[in-house]
Image 1 (tube, rainbow, N blue to C red):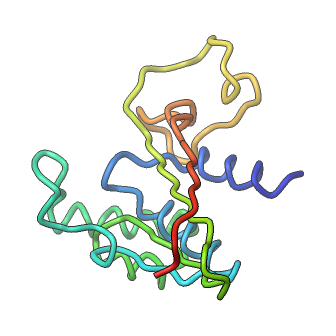
Image 2 (image 1 turned 120 degrees about the vertical axis):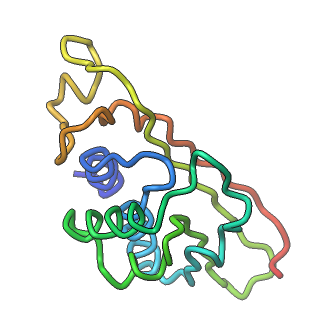
Length: 152
């Protein structure tokens, strides 16, 4: 199976709502670090003051979400690096001046039960590890964009 397909299925198995993406952030950082990227996380890439209500989680909610991420297989060291703020930025220094830069956005939105619908997660029996209102199909709003810019 293609490695990207395996990653997609893994991320769909563990959907996370906005500002709770600690498992996803940790796994993306772990994968990119393994590929040789320098990874920044948490407040190094998220300005905490820019997160308003109702998105801002309480300290207790953050603790619970970070513990959940570890229970679901995220590397505790990468979860800790988020410092309570999910988000990842990766840089690969090729030493060649111009370098492709890639941005990835992942989202999971509340949705209704999709049983009986003709959707890939339903027809292929991809199901979340933790039953909730956030289904794998809700995570199909993942976009990848790439561009070239001078290396700083």
